[in-house]
Length: 219
Length: 219
Image 1 (cartoon, rainbow over the protein chains, first blue to last red):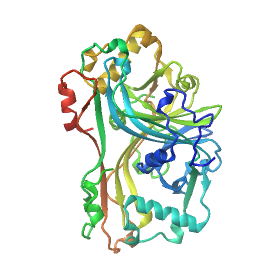
Image 2: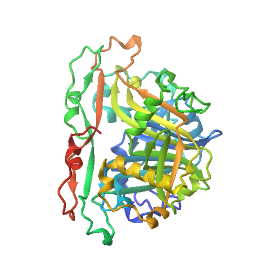
Image 3: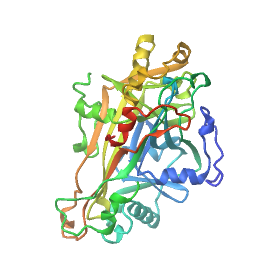
Image 4: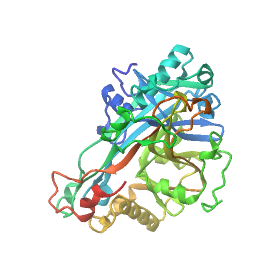
C-alpha cells in the first residue's frame, strides 16, 4: 500500500460523517507540512499516553526525534500500533440550531509502527530536513551537530501509508425545518500567523532576511 | 487529590526537562480554556487511537461530547486509562547550534477516566457552556436542542486532577562553548488569531456584534 493510493484500512475508514474523508496524498501532505507538532498516542504499562512532539515530512514518511533516554521514543520502538494525529482548527461554524454548530478543521491520523533511522547518513539528512523546515537556509550558519549530539539523539519515522484524512470547510448545514429561524449564520475563522521575530537578549547579530520576513509570511 | 494542589502522580511527573513543569491550577485552566480542541489517546481492539475533538471546561472537569454512536465515546466509557492532551505552539526558538533549536509551547496532559454526564440537567448545563464558549450570548438566539437531539448525544467529562502541565517561553539556551558562534538568535513567534467573520450564503440576518468583533479579539 503506497501513499499514491491511500485506500482506507479497517481502522482508517471514516465511519462518522464519511463525506469529510479525503484520501488524496496531496491533501495529506499539505496537512502534515503545515504542522510543526503532532500528537502521538501509544501505550505503556501505565496506560495510554498522548504526547505532543515536533514532526516533519520527507517524502512518504513522518519523522520525529528526541533524546535516546526518552520514554516515549523507547516505547515507540516496540509499539506496533501507534497513532499520530495532526489537526489544524480553521473556524467555528455557527448554525441556526444549537446542535448543528460545528468546527472547520483539517486532520490527519497516521496509523502504523515507527522505525529507527539507524543509518548515520539518513539520520543527518533527517535532522537537516528538520532544520530546513524551521528556518530555510539557516543550517549552514549554525554550529552543526557533533558526533556526540547525533549519538545521543534518536530519529524515528513512520510511513504515511495508513492514514485517515478529514477536512471540513464552509458554512453550517441546518435542518430544513430550521431555515425559517432568524439568526446570523456563518463562520468565525481562525488564523495561523506569525508575529515579528524577537531577538534574544544575548543576540549580537543583525536580523537575517528570513527572520525579518517571518511576520509577513502566512503560517 | 484536587485541582487546588495538583501534585504529580507517577505518570504526570515531568521527567525530561523537569524545569518546564508547572503544577499551578491557574496555568492548567488557562491552557485548557484557550483551546477549542483536545487530542484523546485511548485503546481498542485495533490498537491506539489519537482523536481530535471539541472540548470545554466547567470548574474542575474537561467536557467532550458526540453522537451516542461514536466509537470513541463508547470506548471511553470503558477505558480506565485515557490521556487527553492540549497543546498550543507559540514559537520557534533559534539557537547557535542546530541541536539547541527548540519550540515555545504550552501543553496540558490530563490522565484518568471519563464519566458520562447522565443527569439531564447537567447535560443541558454542559451543552449550554459549550455554546457559550463558541459564541457568548448566542445561545438565546438559536433554536435550542430538542429532547431527541439531547437523547442522541453523549456528554462525557474527565476530572482535571491528574495533569502534567509544561510550558516553555523565551529565547534559546546555548552551550557555553557556542556563545562565540556568530549567528542571529531569537524566537519566531506564532499568533493564534481571528480573521473577519464570513456570513453564510444562506444567511439573511445582520451580523451581530460578537461576529463583527471576532476579528479584533485575540484568540
